[in-house]
Length: 112
Image (cartoon, rainbow, N blue to C red; front, side, top):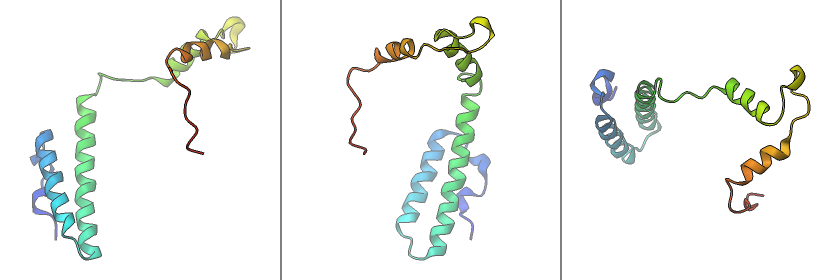
């Protein structure tokens, strides 16, 4: 049986409506006993996740764009590459010195 409040994706156009639907599904999920019920409810969460992703993509369509090619080219240039046509010898110390300014403490190794 489909979830009645998720039958029409066009009804969920505002973020507060999306949150309301997530909360409603969360309440339904707390009462789940059978596997089939969990599958139906998880399908609702999948649909809401897709709707949320579409809303975010529509909002940030041209505001934030990270071009990895441009970033890599600028990084190679910063590190002393591109002289003579190739990457050649890159100054990794220069990059490390610049990055070190962003960190005030050494990273922890408790993940090992």
